[in-house]
Length: 93
Image 1: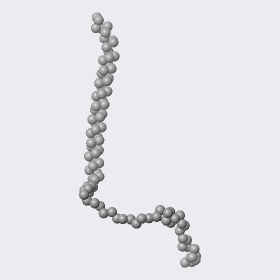
Image 2: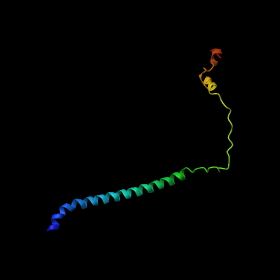
Image 3: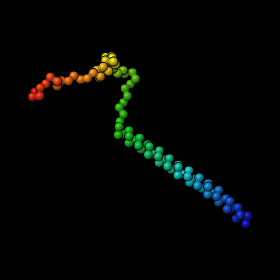
């Protein structure tokens, strides 16, 4: 009879542990599926866009030297109005 009296107190504890374990199992399955999906996505992405091989560090790429430009002359060229070429024309031309 004493075990029947203790049973109502142990039911919530057992239910709590069961819920805790079931939640952990669901999270474990979800994490595995997410990892597998990421691996599949990486495989598809690497096949879809192959990456060009990188040049060796010993190989130097020849860069074209650009002429140094003056920032103020570029600004002045942008701010100057374009010449009006239609001013010297007649209507019938």
